[in-house]
Image (cartoon, rainbow, N blue to C red):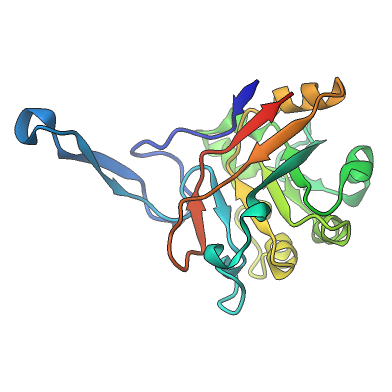
Length: 217
C-alpha cells in the first residue's frame, strides 16, 4: 500500500511566516498555444519539503551535497499526538521507538497537527526539544520528518535549536507532512514502512518541495 504524505501545492496555500507566497497560474493554454503549461511562484520551503543543512548555515551542505540515501529508508514513527499547542516533544517520548532508531532510519514524528492545516492553529504546533534532537542524532538518525510547520516552535527562537542540532549533523528535515496515522497503525501491526522524501533537484538549494510517500508492506 502506498500512502501519500504530501500536502497539495496550490495558490494561496499556507507558508512559513515571511516565506514567499505560492502562486500557480496558467502560462500557456491549449486554447491559445496548443499546450497547457503552468507558471510557478513559490519558495524552496513551500508545502511538504525538505531542509538541507545549509538552510541554517552557509558553511553546511546543500541538498545536492547529500547522498540520495539521506532521503529514503525504513521509517520509525513516533506517536506524539494529543499534545497541547506549543508543547515540547521531550526525550522521554522517544522511548517507544528507541529500539527502531539507527543509521539509515527515517524518524517520522506524528503530532496530528496536519489536521490544523490551513487554519491559524497550524502555527501552534508541538516541536522537538533540542535534547530530543540530540538523542536522535546520537542514535545515528540523519533524517527527521514532522507533520507540522517546523521541528522548532513557531515563531522560532533566533538560534533554531532543533534545526541547528539536526542540520549540524548534516541531517535532513522534512516538514508539512500529513497522513501519518496509517503509518502508526501499520507499525503497531508489525508491518514494514518505507518512506521516500526525494526533493526536486535544485542547484545549491537550501531545501525543496517533495512528493513524500510511504510504502507499507
